[in-house]
Length: 240
Length: 336
Image (cartoon, rainbow over all chains, first blue to last red; front, side, top):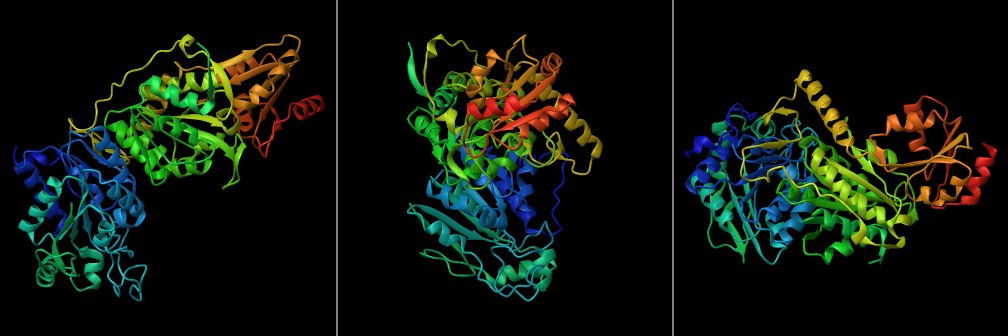
Protein backbone atom coordinates (compact mmCIF):
# COMPACT_ATOMS: atom_id res chain seq x y z
CA UNK A 1 0.00 0.00 0.00
CA UNK A 2 1.00 3.63 -0.35
CA UNK A 3 -0.33 6.48 1.78
CA UNK A 4 -2.79 7.32 -1.00
CA UNK A 5 -4.49 3.96 -0.53
CA UNK A 6 -5.62 5.08 2.91
CA UNK A 7 -8.00 7.61 1.40
CA UNK A 8 -11.59 6.34 0.97
CA UNK A 9 -12.48 6.62 -2.72
CA UNK A 10 -15.45 8.71 -3.80
CA UNK A 11 -15.42 11.24 -1.00
CA UNK A 12 -13.69 14.61 -0.69
CA UNK A 13 -12.96 16.32 2.63
CA UNK A 14 -15.24 19.22 3.58
CA UNK A 15 -12.27 21.09 5.04
CA UNK A 16 -11.35 24.61 3.87
CA UNK A 17 -8.38 25.08 1.58
CA UNK A 18 -5.27 25.43 3.71
CA UNK A 19 -6.81 23.99 6.87
CA UNK A 20 -4.37 22.07 9.05
CA UNK A 21 -6.69 19.07 8.98
CA UNK A 22 -5.48 18.26 5.45
CA UNK A 23 -1.94 18.00 6.82
CA UNK A 24 -3.04 15.86 9.76
CA UNK A 25 -4.91 13.48 7.47
CA UNK A 26 -2.03 13.15 4.99
CA UNK A 27 0.57 12.61 7.71
CA UNK A 28 -1.59 10.03 9.47
CA UNK A 29 -1.90 8.19 6.15
CA UNK A 30 1.88 8.37 5.72
CA UNK A 31 2.44 7.04 9.20
CA UNK A 32 -0.04 4.15 8.80
CA UNK A 33 1.72 3.28 5.56
CA UNK A 34 5.18 3.38 7.15
CA UNK A 35 4.05 1.31 10.12
CA UNK A 36 2.12 -1.02 7.77
CA UNK A 37 -0.93 -0.80 9.97
CA UNK A 38 -4.66 -0.78 9.35
CA UNK A 39 -6.12 0.67 12.54
CA UNK A 40 -9.74 1.25 13.43
CA UNK A 41 -10.22 5.03 13.19
CA UNK A 42 -13.06 6.77 15.01
CA UNK A 43 -14.21 10.38 15.18
CA UNK A 44 -16.87 12.42 16.95
CA UNK A 45 -18.70 15.42 15.54
CA UNK A 46 -17.29 18.60 14.00
CA UNK A 47 -14.80 19.48 11.27
CA UNK A 48 -12.23 17.08 12.74
CA UNK A 49 -15.10 14.66 13.31
CA UNK A 50 -15.17 14.02 9.58
CA UNK A 51 -11.62 12.56 9.63
CA UNK A 52 -12.53 8.91 10.29
CA UNK A 53 -14.81 8.77 7.26
CA UNK A 54 -12.01 9.74 4.88
CA UNK A 55 -9.92 6.70 5.73
CA UNK A 56 -10.47 3.60 3.62
CA UNK A 57 -10.58 1.39 6.72
CA UNK A 58 -13.27 0.20 9.12
CA UNK A 59 -14.23 3.56 10.62
CA UNK A 60 -16.84 5.08 12.93
CA UNK A 61 -18.31 8.59 13.00
CA UNK A 62 -19.97 8.63 16.41
CA UNK A 63 -22.15 11.01 18.38
CA UNK A 64 -21.01 14.41 19.60
CA UNK A 65 -18.83 13.84 22.68
CA UNK A 66 -19.28 10.07 22.86
CA UNK A 67 -16.52 8.72 20.65
CA UNK A 68 -14.08 7.93 23.47
CA UNK A 69 -16.41 5.46 25.26
CA UNK A 70 -17.45 3.98 21.93
CA UNK A 71 -13.79 3.50 21.02
CA UNK A 72 -13.13 1.95 24.43
CA UNK A 73 -15.89 -0.57 23.74
CA UNK A 74 -14.34 -1.36 20.36
CA UNK A 75 -10.88 -1.78 21.93
CA UNK A 76 -12.22 -4.10 24.63
CA UNK A 77 -13.74 -6.28 21.92
CA UNK A 78 -10.77 -6.00 19.53
CA UNK A 79 -7.69 -6.04 21.74
CA UNK A 80 -5.68 -7.23 18.72
CA UNK A 81 -6.32 -3.99 16.78
CA UNK A 82 -4.94 -0.47 17.06
CA UNK A 83 -7.73 1.95 17.92
CA UNK A 84 -7.24 5.61 17.04
CA UNK A 85 -9.63 8.46 17.79
CA UNK A 86 -9.29 11.70 15.82
CA UNK A 87 -11.61 14.45 17.00
CA UNK A 88 -11.82 18.11 17.92
CA UNK A 89 -11.37 20.13 21.09
CA UNK A 90 -15.09 20.84 21.50
CA UNK A 91 -15.95 17.17 21.05
CA UNK A 92 -13.26 15.76 23.35
CA UNK A 93 -12.78 18.49 25.95
CA UNK A 94 -16.24 20.04 26.33
CA UNK A 95 -19.24 17.81 25.58
CA UNK A 96 -17.09 14.67 25.93
CA UNK A 97 -14.83 15.89 28.75
CA UNK A 98 -16.12 13.44 31.33
CA UNK A 99 -15.25 10.48 29.12
CA UNK A 100 -11.67 11.73 28.63
CA UNK A 101 -11.28 11.84 32.42
CA UNK A 102 -12.42 8.28 32.87
CA UNK A 103 -11.17 6.37 29.84
CA UNK A 104 -7.70 7.87 30.46
CA UNK A 105 -8.00 6.87 34.12
CA UNK A 106 -8.85 3.30 33.04
CA UNK A 107 -5.70 3.58 30.91
CA UNK A 108 -7.21 1.86 27.87
CA UNK A 109 -4.57 1.13 25.24
CA UNK A 110 -5.64 3.56 22.54
CA UNK A 111 -4.54 6.82 20.94
CA UNK A 112 -6.63 9.97 20.98
CA UNK A 113 -5.62 12.74 18.58
CA UNK A 114 -7.25 16.05 19.43
CA UNK A 115 -7.06 18.61 16.66
CA UNK A 116 -7.44 21.84 18.60
CA UNK A 117 -8.74 24.58 16.30
CA UNK A 118 -9.64 26.68 19.36
CA UNK A 119 -13.22 27.27 18.24
CA UNK A 120 -16.47 25.54 17.17
CA UNK A 121 -15.71 25.74 13.46
CA UNK A 122 -18.42 23.72 11.75
CA UNK A 123 -21.22 25.57 13.56
CA UNK A 124 -19.82 28.97 12.59
CA UNK A 125 -17.25 30.05 15.17
CA UNK A 126 -18.49 29.93 18.75
CA UNK A 127 -16.40 29.83 21.95
CA UNK A 128 -14.77 26.44 22.52
CA UNK A 129 -13.09 25.10 25.68
CA UNK A 130 -9.68 25.96 24.20
CA UNK A 131 -10.44 29.45 22.88
CA UNK A 132 -7.67 31.75 24.19
CA UNK A 133 -8.67 34.32 26.81
CA UNK A 134 -9.55 37.59 25.11
CA UNK A 135 -10.35 36.01 21.73
CA UNK A 136 -13.46 37.24 19.97
CA UNK A 137 -15.91 34.58 18.79
CA UNK A 138 -19.59 34.61 17.75
CA UNK A 139 -20.60 34.01 21.36
CA UNK A 140 -17.90 36.18 22.97
CA UNK A 141 -18.20 39.38 20.94
CA UNK A 142 -16.31 41.31 23.64
CA UNK A 143 -13.58 38.68 23.89
CA UNK A 144 -13.57 35.52 26.01
CA UNK A 145 -13.24 36.25 29.71
CA UNK A 146 -12.23 32.75 30.79
CA UNK A 147 -8.98 30.81 30.65
CA UNK A 148 -8.92 27.91 28.17
CA UNK A 149 -8.83 24.33 29.40
CA UNK A 150 -5.41 22.64 29.64
CA UNK A 151 -5.75 19.09 28.30
CA UNK A 152 -2.22 18.30 29.48
CA UNK A 153 -3.23 18.79 33.14
CA UNK A 154 -6.30 16.59 32.70
CA UNK A 155 -4.06 13.77 31.48
CA UNK A 156 -1.55 14.45 34.26
CA UNK A 157 -4.21 13.89 36.92
CA UNK A 158 -3.65 10.17 36.23
CA UNK A 159 -0.76 8.14 37.66
CA UNK A 160 0.14 6.83 34.18
CA UNK A 161 -0.16 9.22 31.26
CA UNK A 162 1.13 10.16 27.82
CA UNK A 163 0.48 13.65 26.51
CA UNK A 164 2.06 15.25 23.45
CA UNK A 165 1.55 18.69 21.90
CA UNK A 166 2.43 19.63 18.34
CA UNK A 167 1.22 21.66 15.38
CA UNK A 168 0.73 20.70 11.71
CA UNK A 169 3.56 23.08 10.78
CA UNK A 170 6.04 20.94 12.71
CA UNK A 171 5.28 18.08 10.30
CA UNK A 172 8.13 15.72 11.14
CA UNK A 173 7.66 16.25 14.84
CA UNK A 174 3.91 15.70 14.57
CA UNK A 175 4.48 12.34 12.88
CA UNK A 176 7.11 11.38 15.43
CA UNK A 177 4.92 12.07 18.48
CA UNK A 178 1.89 10.33 16.97
CA UNK A 179 4.11 7.29 16.38
CA UNK A 180 5.21 7.41 20.01
CA UNK A 181 1.58 7.71 21.10
CA UNK A 182 0.56 4.66 19.06
CA UNK A 183 3.47 2.69 20.52
CA UNK A 184 2.65 3.80 24.09
CA UNK A 185 1.22 0.91 26.07
CA UNK A 186 -1.85 2.64 27.47
CA UNK A 187 -3.96 5.73 26.90
CA UNK A 188 -2.10 8.30 24.80
CA UNK A 189 -3.31 11.80 23.97
CA UNK A 190 -1.88 14.03 21.24
CA UNK A 191 -3.01 17.64 20.97
CA UNK A 192 -2.44 19.26 17.58
CA UNK A 193 -2.80 23.05 17.69
CA UNK A 194 -4.26 24.07 14.34
CA UNK A 195 -6.39 27.19 14.56
CA UNK A 196 -9.48 27.52 12.40
CA UNK A 197 -8.64 29.93 9.57
CA UNK A 198 -12.18 31.06 8.79
CA UNK A 199 -13.35 31.96 12.28
CA UNK A 200 -10.83 32.57 15.02
CA UNK A 201 -8.06 32.90 12.42
CA UNK A 202 -9.97 35.77 10.84
CA UNK A 203 -10.44 37.63 14.14
CA UNK A 204 -6.74 37.14 14.96
CA UNK A 205 -5.67 38.42 11.53
CA UNK A 206 -4.45 34.96 10.48
CA UNK A 207 -7.03 34.02 7.87
CA UNK A 208 -4.42 33.36 5.16
CA UNK A 209 -2.90 29.87 5.59
CA UNK A 210 0.62 31.24 5.09
CA UNK A 211 0.07 33.77 7.89
CA UNK A 212 -1.33 31.12 10.20
CA UNK A 213 1.54 28.73 9.53
CA UNK A 214 4.11 31.47 10.06
CA UNK A 215 2.39 32.38 13.32
CA UNK A 216 2.47 28.76 14.52
CA UNK A 217 6.13 28.41 13.52
CA UNK A 218 7.16 31.65 15.20
CA UNK A 219 5.23 31.17 18.42
CA UNK A 220 5.62 27.47 19.19
CA UNK A 221 8.92 25.71 19.89
CA UNK A 222 9.81 22.11 20.55
CA UNK A 223 11.23 21.41 24.00
CA UNK A 224 12.65 18.21 25.46
CA UNK A 225 12.73 16.54 28.85
CA UNK A 226 10.24 18.81 30.51
CA UNK A 227 7.95 17.68 33.33
CA UNK A 228 5.21 20.07 32.29
CA UNK A 229 4.82 21.96 29.01
CA UNK A 230 4.31 25.70 29.26
CA UNK A 231 2.07 27.60 26.86
CA UNK A 232 3.52 27.68 23.32
CA UNK A 233 5.80 24.71 24.08
CA UNK A 234 5.59 21.55 22.00
CA UNK A 235 6.76 18.25 23.45
CA UNK A 236 5.91 15.01 25.17
CA UNK A 237 5.17 14.55 28.86
CA UNK A 238 4.65 11.05 30.10
CA UNK A 239 4.76 8.84 33.14
CA UNK A 240 4.60 5.11 32.85
CA UNK B 1 -34.06 -28.22 39.17
CA UNK B 2 -36.00 -25.29 40.53
CA UNK B 3 -34.10 -22.24 41.76
CA UNK B 4 -35.20 -19.09 43.53
CA UNK B 5 -34.31 -16.15 41.28
CA UNK B 6 -34.93 -12.44 41.31
CA UNK B 7 -36.28 -10.69 38.20
CA UNK B 8 -33.08 -8.69 37.70
CA UNK B 9 -30.91 -11.80 38.19
CA UNK B 10 -33.01 -13.65 35.64
CA UNK B 11 -32.32 -10.85 33.14
CA UNK B 12 -28.58 -11.20 33.81
CA UNK B 13 -28.73 -14.99 33.53
CA UNK B 14 -30.77 -14.79 30.33
CA UNK B 15 -28.18 -12.45 28.84
CA UNK B 16 -25.38 -14.90 29.65
CA UNK B 17 -27.32 -17.80 28.10
CA UNK B 18 -27.92 -15.65 25.00
CA UNK B 19 -24.15 -15.23 24.57
CA UNK B 20 -23.51 -11.88 26.27
CA UNK B 21 -19.81 -11.04 26.15
CA UNK B 22 -19.85 -7.36 27.12
CA UNK B 23 -21.74 -5.35 29.68
CA UNK B 24 -21.37 -1.66 30.55
CA UNK B 25 -23.61 0.17 32.96
CA UNK B 26 -23.99 2.85 35.59
CA UNK B 27 -25.59 2.09 38.96
CA UNK B 28 -29.23 3.13 39.30
CA UNK B 29 -32.11 1.90 41.42
CA UNK B 30 -34.02 -0.35 40.74
CA UNK B 31 -31.84 -1.92 38.01
CA UNK B 32 -28.50 -2.33 39.81
CA UNK B 33 -28.86 -6.06 40.62
CA UNK B 34 -28.46 -6.77 36.91
CA UNK B 35 -24.96 -5.28 36.98
CA UNK B 36 -24.20 -6.91 40.35
CA UNK B 37 -25.02 -10.29 38.80
CA UNK B 38 -22.98 -9.63 35.65
CA UNK B 39 -19.96 -8.31 37.59
CA UNK B 40 -19.54 -11.90 38.78
CA UNK B 41 -19.66 -13.50 35.34
CA UNK B 42 -16.83 -14.29 32.95
CA UNK B 43 -17.47 -11.40 30.56
CA UNK B 44 -15.94 -8.02 29.73
CA UNK B 45 -17.58 -5.79 32.35
CA UNK B 46 -17.27 -2.03 32.83
CA UNK B 47 -18.90 0.23 35.38
CA UNK B 48 -18.83 3.47 33.40
CA UNK B 49 -18.76 7.12 34.44
CA UNK B 50 -22.35 7.69 33.29
CA UNK B 51 -25.12 6.23 31.15
CA UNK B 52 -23.90 8.09 28.04
CA UNK B 53 -20.64 6.15 28.28
CA UNK B 54 -22.49 2.94 29.16
CA UNK B 55 -24.61 2.84 26.02
CA UNK B 56 -21.86 4.08 23.70
CA UNK B 57 -19.35 1.58 25.05
CA UNK B 58 -21.88 -1.20 24.53
CA UNK B 59 -22.38 0.03 20.96
CA UNK B 60 -18.59 0.00 20.42
CA UNK B 61 -18.15 -3.48 21.89
CA UNK B 62 -21.01 -4.78 19.78
CA UNK B 63 -19.43 -3.29 16.65
CA UNK B 64 -16.23 -5.01 17.78
CA UNK B 65 -18.02 -8.35 17.65
CA UNK B 66 -19.26 -8.98 21.20
CA UNK B 67 -22.92 -9.44 22.08
CA UNK B 68 -23.50 -6.44 24.35
CA UNK B 69 -26.00 -5.08 26.84
CA UNK B 70 -26.57 -2.17 29.18
CA UNK B 71 -29.25 -1.71 31.82
CA UNK B 72 -30.68 1.33 33.56
CA UNK B 73 -33.82 3.01 34.88
CA UNK B 74 -35.82 6.06 33.71
CA UNK B 75 -33.28 8.86 34.30
CA UNK B 76 -30.47 6.86 32.68
CA UNK B 77 -32.78 5.71 29.89
CA UNK B 78 -33.45 9.39 29.10
CA UNK B 79 -29.70 10.02 28.85
CA UNK B 80 -29.35 7.10 26.42
CA UNK B 81 -31.99 8.29 23.96
CA UNK B 82 -29.69 10.06 21.48
CA UNK B 83 -27.50 6.96 21.32
CA UNK B 84 -30.51 4.68 20.74
CA UNK B 85 -31.27 6.60 17.54
CA UNK B 86 -27.60 6.31 16.58
CA UNK B 87 -27.64 2.53 17.13
CA UNK B 88 -30.73 2.29 14.88
CA UNK B 89 -29.00 4.43 12.26
CA UNK B 90 -25.74 2.46 12.13
CA UNK B 91 -27.62 -0.84 12.57
CA UNK B 92 -25.84 -2.37 15.52
CA UNK B 93 -27.31 -5.19 17.62
CA UNK B 94 -27.68 -4.29 21.29
CA UNK B 95 -29.97 -4.93 24.26
CA UNK B 96 -31.00 -2.08 26.56
CA UNK B 97 -32.90 -2.93 29.75
CA UNK B 98 -35.00 -0.22 31.38
CA UNK B 99 -36.32 -1.11 34.83
CA UNK B 100 -39.05 1.50 35.25
CA UNK B 101 -39.47 3.59 38.38
CA UNK B 102 -41.80 6.50 39.07
CA UNK B 103 -40.86 9.70 37.25
CA UNK B 104 -40.59 12.35 36.01
CA UNK B 105 -37.14 13.36 37.21
CA UNK B 106 -35.75 11.59 40.27
CA UNK B 107 -39.35 10.83 41.23
CA UNK B 108 -39.84 7.74 43.39
CA UNK B 109 -36.70 5.65 42.78
CA UNK B 110 -37.77 2.46 44.55
CA UNK B 111 -41.38 2.39 43.37
CA UNK B 112 -42.65 0.63 40.24
CA UNK B 113 -44.06 2.43 37.24
CA UNK B 114 -44.87 1.94 33.59
CA UNK B 115 -44.19 5.55 32.75
CA UNK B 116 -41.57 4.93 30.07
CA UNK B 117 -43.78 3.22 27.48
CA UNK B 118 -43.81 6.29 25.22
CA UNK B 119 -40.13 6.93 25.83
CA UNK B 120 -39.30 3.37 24.79
CA UNK B 121 -41.16 3.95 21.52
CA UNK B 122 -40.49 7.61 20.74
CA UNK B 123 -37.66 8.75 23.03
CA UNK B 124 -34.99 9.46 20.43
CA UNK B 125 -35.24 12.25 17.86
CA UNK B 126 -36.35 11.59 14.30
CA UNK B 127 -38.30 8.56 13.05
CA UNK B 128 -37.32 5.02 13.98
CA UNK B 129 -39.02 1.72 14.72
CA UNK B 130 -37.93 0.04 17.91
CA UNK B 131 -38.79 -3.47 19.07
CA UNK B 132 -39.85 -3.44 22.74
CA UNK B 133 -40.52 -6.46 25.01
CA UNK B 134 -42.04 -6.44 28.49
CA UNK B 135 -42.18 -9.72 30.45
CA UNK B 136 -44.35 -10.29 33.53
CA UNK B 137 -42.62 -13.02 35.57
CA UNK B 138 -39.12 -13.98 36.66
CA UNK B 139 -39.15 -16.87 34.20
CA UNK B 140 -40.18 -14.51 31.43
CA UNK B 141 -37.43 -12.05 32.41
CA UNK B 142 -35.02 -14.87 31.57
CA UNK B 143 -36.81 -15.96 28.42
CA UNK B 144 -37.44 -12.57 26.86
CA UNK B 145 -33.92 -11.34 27.56
CA UNK B 146 -32.78 -14.18 25.30
CA UNK B 147 -35.41 -13.24 22.73
CA UNK B 148 -34.28 -9.61 22.93
CA UNK B 149 -30.76 -10.70 21.98
CA UNK B 150 -32.12 -12.85 19.15
CA UNK B 151 -34.26 -10.00 17.81
CA UNK B 152 -31.31 -7.60 18.00
CA UNK B 153 -29.09 -9.93 15.99
CA UNK B 154 -31.82 -10.50 13.43
CA UNK B 155 -32.84 -6.85 13.04
CA UNK B 156 -29.40 -5.28 13.65
CA UNK B 157 -31.05 -2.84 16.01
CA UNK B 158 -31.12 -1.99 19.73
CA UNK B 159 -33.92 -3.90 21.47
CA UNK B 160 -35.58 -2.40 24.53
CA UNK B 161 -36.44 -4.82 27.33
CA UNK B 162 -38.78 -3.16 29.81
CA UNK B 163 -39.23 -4.20 33.40
CA UNK B 164 -40.38 -2.35 36.51
CA UNK B 165 -39.24 -2.03 40.11
CA UNK B 166 -41.83 -4.62 41.19
CA UNK B 167 -41.03 -7.29 38.59
CA UNK B 168 -37.27 -6.76 38.81
CA UNK B 169 -37.29 -7.23 42.58
CA UNK B 170 -39.72 -10.13 42.55
CA UNK B 171 -38.39 -13.53 43.68
CA UNK B 172 -39.92 -16.63 42.10
CA UNK B 173 -38.91 -20.25 41.64
CA UNK B 174 -37.79 -21.01 38.11
CA UNK B 175 -36.71 -24.28 36.50
CA UNK B 176 -34.17 -22.89 34.05
CA UNK B 177 -33.21 -26.30 32.58
CA UNK B 178 -36.79 -26.92 31.52
CA UNK B 179 -36.96 -23.74 29.40
CA UNK B 180 -36.33 -24.27 25.71
CA UNK B 181 -34.77 -21.52 23.69
CA UNK B 182 -32.84 -20.92 20.51
CA UNK B 183 -29.84 -18.63 20.21
CA UNK B 184 -29.26 -16.45 17.14
CA UNK B 185 -25.59 -16.23 16.32
CA UNK B 186 -23.82 -13.03 15.32
CA UNK B 187 -23.55 -12.59 11.56
CA UNK B 188 -22.38 -8.95 11.45
CA UNK B 189 -18.62 -8.97 10.82
CA UNK B 190 -16.66 -7.43 13.70
CA UNK B 191 -15.23 -3.97 13.20
CA UNK B 192 -11.60 -3.92 12.15
CA UNK B 193 -11.01 -5.95 9.01
CA UNK B 194 -13.30 -4.42 6.41
CA UNK B 195 -13.57 -0.98 4.85
CA UNK B 196 -16.97 0.11 6.18
CA UNK B 197 -17.91 3.50 7.58
CA UNK B 198 -20.47 3.60 10.39
CA UNK B 199 -21.91 7.10 10.58
CA UNK B 200 -24.97 8.81 12.02
CA UNK B 201 -25.15 10.89 8.85
CA UNK B 202 -27.41 9.81 6.03
CA UNK B 203 -24.96 8.10 3.70
CA UNK B 204 -24.59 5.65 0.88
CA UNK B 205 -21.73 3.18 0.79
CA UNK B 206 -20.06 5.06 3.63
CA UNK B 207 -20.24 8.40 1.82
CA UNK B 208 -22.38 11.19 3.36
CA UNK B 209 -25.45 12.20 1.35
CA UNK B 210 -26.82 14.79 3.73
CA UNK B 211 -29.01 16.70 1.27
CA UNK B 212 -30.45 13.76 -0.65
CA UNK B 213 -34.17 13.65 0.22
CA UNK B 214 -34.90 10.75 -2.15
CA UNK B 215 -32.21 8.63 -0.51
CA UNK B 216 -33.66 9.42 2.92
CA UNK B 217 -37.13 8.28 1.85
CA UNK B 218 -35.76 5.00 0.50
CA UNK B 219 -33.65 4.49 3.59
CA UNK B 220 -36.45 5.08 6.14
CA UNK B 221 -38.75 2.75 4.21
CA UNK B 222 -36.07 0.07 4.27
CA UNK B 223 -35.62 0.52 8.03
CA UNK B 224 -39.37 0.19 8.58
CA UNK B 225 -39.64 -2.93 6.47
CA UNK B 226 -36.64 -4.49 8.20
CA UNK B 227 -38.23 -4.10 11.63
CA UNK B 228 -41.63 -5.29 10.39
CA UNK B 229 -40.03 -8.39 8.88
CA UNK B 230 -38.07 -9.24 12.03
CA UNK B 231 -41.08 -8.56 14.24
CA UNK B 232 -43.04 -11.33 12.52
CA UNK B 233 -40.74 -13.81 14.26
CA UNK B 234 -41.40 -12.27 17.66
CA UNK B 235 -45.20 -12.10 17.96
CA UNK B 236 -45.30 -12.49 21.73
CA UNK B 237 -48.58 -12.11 23.61
CA UNK B 238 -50.98 -13.94 25.90
CA UNK B 239 -54.71 -14.00 25.31
CA UNK B 240 -57.22 -15.48 27.71
CA UNK B 241 -60.72 -15.40 26.29
CA UNK B 242 -63.75 -15.34 28.55
CA UNK B 243 -66.76 -16.15 26.34
CA UNK B 244 -69.15 -14.79 28.95
CA UNK B 245 -67.60 -11.33 28.95
CA UNK B 246 -68.09 -8.44 26.54
CA UNK B 247 -65.16 -6.60 28.09
CA UNK B 248 -61.51 -7.00 27.15
CA UNK B 249 -58.81 -5.98 29.61
CA UNK B 250 -55.38 -5.07 28.24
CA UNK B 251 -52.43 -5.05 30.61
CA UNK B 252 -48.72 -5.88 30.54
CA UNK B 253 -45.77 -6.30 32.88
CA UNK B 254 -46.50 -6.36 36.59
CA UNK B 255 -50.01 -4.94 36.08
CA UNK B 256 -50.99 -8.05 34.13
CA UNK B 257 -49.93 -10.20 37.10
CA UNK B 258 -52.04 -8.20 39.50
CA UNK B 259 -55.18 -8.45 37.36
CA UNK B 260 -54.83 -12.14 36.52
CA UNK B 261 -57.67 -13.20 38.97
CA UNK B 262 -60.02 -11.10 36.81
CA UNK B 263 -59.88 -13.75 34.06
CA UNK B 264 -62.88 -15.35 35.81
CA UNK B 265 -64.99 -12.39 34.70
CA UNK B 266 -63.19 -10.78 31.75
CA UNK B 267 -61.12 -11.55 28.69
CA UNK B 268 -57.49 -10.48 29.05
CA UNK B 269 -55.00 -9.58 26.33
CA UNK B 270 -51.39 -9.19 27.40
CA UNK B 271 -48.92 -7.87 24.81
CA UNK B 272 -45.37 -9.03 25.58
CA UNK B 273 -44.07 -7.30 22.48
CA UNK B 274 -45.32 -3.77 23.12
CA UNK B 275 -43.79 -2.36 19.92
CA UNK B 276 -44.28 -2.65 17.04
CA UNK B 277 -47.88 -2.93 18.24
CA UNK B 278 -49.49 -6.33 17.57
CA UNK B 279 -52.05 -4.65 15.29
CA UNK B 280 -53.63 -7.63 13.59
CA UNK B 281 -53.98 -9.66 16.75
CA UNK B 282 -55.37 -6.68 18.64
CA UNK B 283 -57.96 -5.98 15.95
CA UNK B 284 -59.02 -9.62 15.88
CA UNK B 285 -59.41 -9.77 19.66
CA UNK B 286 -61.03 -6.33 19.94
CA UNK B 287 -63.79 -7.27 17.48
CA UNK B 288 -65.11 -9.84 19.92
CA UNK B 289 -65.62 -7.30 22.69
CA UNK B 290 -67.88 -4.30 23.24
CA UNK B 291 -65.66 -2.61 25.77
CA UNK B 292 -61.90 -2.39 26.00
CA UNK B 293 -60.07 -1.28 29.14
CA UNK B 294 -56.33 -0.65 29.33
CA UNK B 295 -54.91 -0.93 32.83
CA UNK B 296 -51.46 0.60 33.19
CA UNK B 297 -49.20 2.45 35.63
CA UNK B 298 -49.14 5.82 33.84
CA UNK B 299 -51.55 8.45 32.52
CA UNK B 300 -52.58 6.43 29.49
CA UNK B 301 -49.49 6.05 27.32
CA UNK B 302 -50.35 2.62 25.89
CA UNK B 303 -54.09 3.31 25.91
CA UNK B 304 -53.44 6.15 23.44
CA UNK B 305 -51.54 3.73 21.19
CA UNK B 306 -54.36 1.18 21.28
CA UNK B 307 -56.95 3.88 20.58
CA UNK B 308 -54.95 4.98 17.54
CA UNK B 309 -54.66 1.43 16.19
CA UNK B 310 -58.26 0.34 16.84
CA UNK B 311 -59.87 3.71 16.06
CA UNK B 312 -62.42 3.32 18.83
CA UNK B 313 -62.98 4.55 22.37
CA UNK B 314 -60.77 2.79 24.92
CA UNK B 315 -61.25 3.04 28.68
CA UNK B 316 -58.31 3.63 30.97
CA UNK B 317 -57.71 2.51 34.52
CA UNK B 318 -54.52 4.06 35.75
CA UNK B 319 -52.42 2.96 38.69
CA UNK B 320 -49.96 5.73 39.42
CA UNK B 321 -47.53 6.84 42.11
CA UNK B 322 -46.10 3.34 42.49
CA UNK B 323 -49.19 1.70 43.97
CA UNK B 324 -51.19 -1.18 42.51
CA UNK B 325 -54.57 -2.21 43.92
CA UNK B 326 -56.73 -5.01 42.57
CA UNK B 327 -59.60 -3.77 44.74
CA UNK B 328 -59.42 -0.30 43.18
CA UNK B 329 -59.20 -1.78 39.68
CA UNK B 330 -62.30 -3.92 40.37
CA UNK B 331 -64.18 -0.89 41.65
CA UNK B 332 -63.34 1.15 38.57
CA UNK B 333 -64.26 -1.77 36.32
CA UNK B 334 -67.69 -1.93 37.97
CA UNK B 335 -68.18 1.76 37.13
CA UNK B 336 -67.28 1.11 33.48
